[in-house]
Length: 372
Image 1: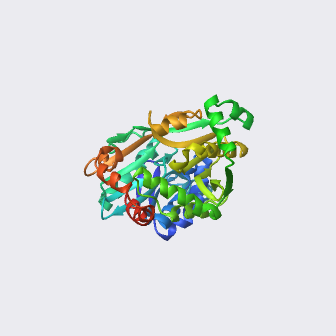
Image 2: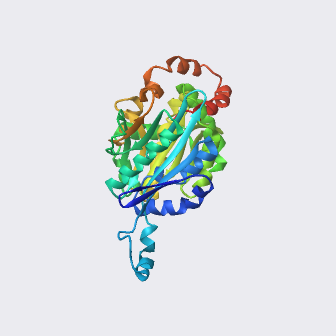
Image 3: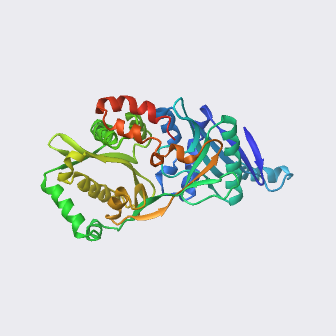
């Protein structure tokens, strides 16, 4: 499926061909200077394998500037005719409970259009809206950091911000940047004789044990363990797990993904029962150390609502808010219907918190697969 725009051809890639194009798209993202690992096209494969979402990608290909050229010149222009000038990865999310959605991209905080020009970005959104119509979804959701002006993108969600910390070049400078309260909590964790462990699939079970328990406490259906397995397998040199233990018991755990200049923590949790140990503070201290040791310039703590408890937690580390603009092509209903803060799911959240953890781990992945 292709469509023509001024100076570019927009092509929809799906099915077996999608895997073949991933290296080309990765090279484009790298050349574009994107520092966030959320921009990697490999996430399409992760989401398909672990969540059952159907992946698509719209690619914009530059068209030759002159329609008719001598044969000798045509051969020199062939590279231009295959040159990617824009991408829009998409995942088709569907369930009996919630309906159908087209999202760029589920689970991740950053997504949406990546393009060389405004005109190309406009053409990609045009084609995404057509795909949304074809799939008959409730809405198209593009998780931008700054808005893309387009007549179809009539709704916006701006209630959350990215919390990001500019990292110093040394661990000593990082330590000195914290206020005394933060340093005291880190030292308390050290005095509790907690141990910090780094690994990959070998630590997945411990990480997921903490993560699933914390999600139950929050009243939120938990992602499947297979999601984190797929991330670690897809990005073996960039993704890793940190677990903090007391004796042999895991108290806190986090997934880190290291991009070219930015480290992100898509998922991190700790057990509330053991807050007195400051295990979570000790863990984040080591997450930041890890990023500095890798020479990263930024640490992304994830998204938070301004002045919420998670916002204040991230703020104490020195993180500053950065714009997050989720844009929508709305076809049915409202965008607020699927948001936890809408109140629509208040009863379900209260009931979920009462479930045994084992049952929440059984039901959660089935439910969360359908939530955009």
